[in-house]
Image (tube, rainbow, N blue to C red; front, side):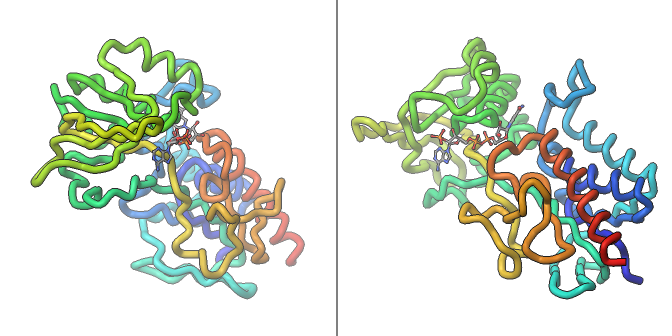
Length: 307
Ligand code: NAP
């Protein structure tokens, strides 16, 4: 059977594409992934800026609602991991660990993953004090002194959330000005458990079996000193998840999937990209959802033209 639309990824972009494609009678399949289903919002706490929810709601609740809405119109959501994509030609092949799907169009909404600092002992101490997800691991750091690296909204959000557990949270940022929105910065500044280290980078990690501290380097003076900490949360942004397509599709220099703005068309006919994997700038739940809508409409238009 050749499907009209296969959607790879199940964040706000993938599910919104599914809602629109299903309502257009295209019977979309969403390949949601087994571990990463729901995307980055599954690891978020309160989402306060998604329109229509004035009281805010938890990230996983928002994703459950999107899935339910997509399924209500006939989307087939499958919790399978895509391992291969063959995008050339009129019929595309999408291989998961369980099945091979053939489709006239493919919508890529694979999102992004955590950027690492690239330190020597980072992988060794990952899960032993080093983490990339406060909502996943924060609980393990009750009454401890921890640091959060980064100066964006993620760093502010993670630091604020971590004060629920930690004794102190020190935000380490490489400049003296935050990238984060003023509202998020204010919230962190008003929290008595949060301290700030500006113009500082983590140069080295200390600890044998688990993290005991970090070596900080002052980016202005070059001075180094040890900051004791049993936890380090890295919140320095994301990198697009393009591993399945990077050898067959055009990418931006930054590594994101290149699309023909304002459409979601990639350089391969019948293949569309939406959400964080194709967004170098905004990376919000609402902008991902909006681009998912555009991808579904682009796919619908493509199918109509091909008839
Ligand atoms: P981001 O905005 O790209 O910020 C990354 C931060 O990490 C920057 O401050 C950057 O420093 C720093 N950084 C990058 N590489 C580094 C390195 N190698 N070493 C040390 N520091 C490094 O990423 P984000 O905070 O994950 O946010 C991504 C997007 O999601 C943004 O659009 C953000 O608004 C959105 N977001 C929104 C919310 C919300 O609204 N509730 C929550 C989380 C995220 P420089 O500033 O010096 O470049």
